[in-house]
Length: 429
Image (cartoon, rainbow, N blue to C red):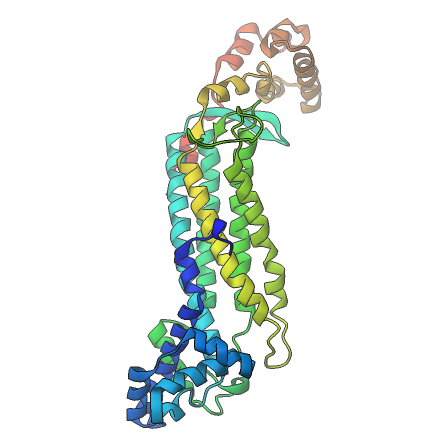
């Protein structure tokens, strides 16, 4: 990942140094169990654990000759062990170590992402409660509908990301898998008890039935969840971008005193952070197709999945980590403008009360179709001529036949659009 979107905590997980470190830890666990079983000398297991080392630059140098990164690793690590090196990587194949290591890397990145997701959920909940009764116009198709509250909007995001947390937990369980079953997955050269031992040490599950590799449907599921999270991030980002438009300006990203919005126009304050998240979300989602295509491999294995994972697994997990952190900071520091919300709420002269009038007319005995036509005609006159909706209603002789003046006035005075807000908020845990 380019430095602009990188956060060091996850980047470290994907370095070659860390990868070889994990490979070494797995190899030591395998040797430890084999020694307990009497398959290799106990001294060999002790030598492997105490003497094994690796040198990243040396491994890269050896790989230029072997054209096989794992063989290069074995050759380099074995050179530090001495006589007992013949028992290093005993009875296993490279995929046993590589895939179990990949599981560990994914698990560690997922735990960090989970933490960030929980932080965002907490922030959304806080803003939701704070603005529980901050009235604003709700919009459908981008057009004024009926009033909601800004808190309710945040509550919707709060629950969406709470669902994402549940999905991520399932995905973490899905990829926390150990597979040490030897060539083509038959345990011909390694006893299944070794796999169980290593899995227990890692607090992972054993693969149900592996081929030579862990089946890639597990990884496809994990990255599909990250793609869903990215879409949720974009949904919030787009909402902020729309509400920050100059003619709306109900919310605004925090703008630092030294920040610049344009090289040409000094007045500009753009929602650049949210726009950035829209782009990052597109990138994250783009990964799902290659990971889905990785599921279909030849026979018991091939390596067509390998390049995808080497490139995308680090970059996508880093991008999700970055996006969640950025969104959390945006929501924390978001500037809210209740006065503009009120102004926009009244922008169309009260026609958002149209349904209230419609329902009252039906209670008075009119068919819904007739009542709808009557109310729509007055609403369109109000909209097209910038006239107050309530005044037009009071002047309409047909309406007055069914509803008296006092009742009409009460409709427009009442602010009961969010009368059930407390009931809704009882769901928030």
